[in-house]
Amino acid sequence: MTKKLFILLVLFFNFQIVLAEKKIQTIYEGNLDAKVKIIVFESLTCGACGNFHKNVYPDLKKDFIDTGLVKIEFRNFPLDLAAFNASKIAHCRNDGKSKILHRLFENQSEWVKGQSIEDLNENLKKFVNKIDKDLDIDACLIDKDIEDYILNDRIKGVKNYEVDSTPTLIINDKKFDNPQNYKKLKKTLEKMI
Image 1 (cartoon, rainbow, N blue to C red):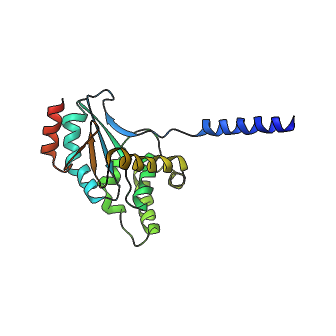
Image 2 (image 1 turned 180 degrees about the horizontal axis):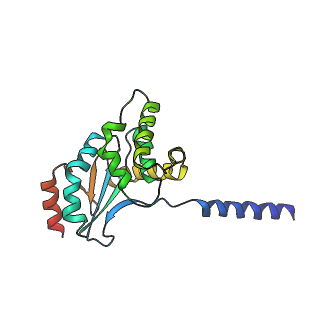
Image 3 (image 1 turned 180 degrees about the vertical axis):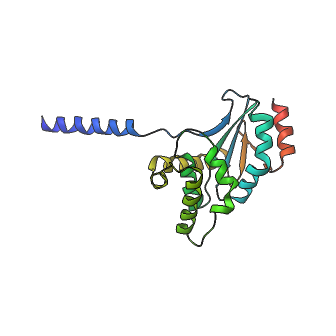
């Protein structure tokens, strides 16, 4: 009888742990039912990714995302520990919103600096505290569900799309060359709509 009770308790608690795991939401913008879906794999310490957010993304948003023609998903492909930690913070509210993500890219020069990961983390914390004082950054950095989600994004990027650099754009499941060229991206999207 004791053995059966023990097995039942183990099964019950394992079931409870599975229920307790939270589902991490993908950060996205745009119409969920859009005909064109873009996935962008990026690293928060990547200068080219920062340039994409500053120089390409605003026009893409205005011309295609805000008009409901395109949905974009921002996927994680951290190239270093600082980018990994910043990705954790971008996902920490787990609301699917991109505000913190965009602010981190737009202000890379303010927080991507230092001689060690400790320096980078400290600069990251100072920057995020300026834009969101209520976010528990230390809790974000140790959240295992978020860590797993980010690492799985990176694994899926390599496995499903052969991602080997950032930023990498996937448009309707096909890799797009030269994501820094908005004119070429716009022409490609116009043909698909």
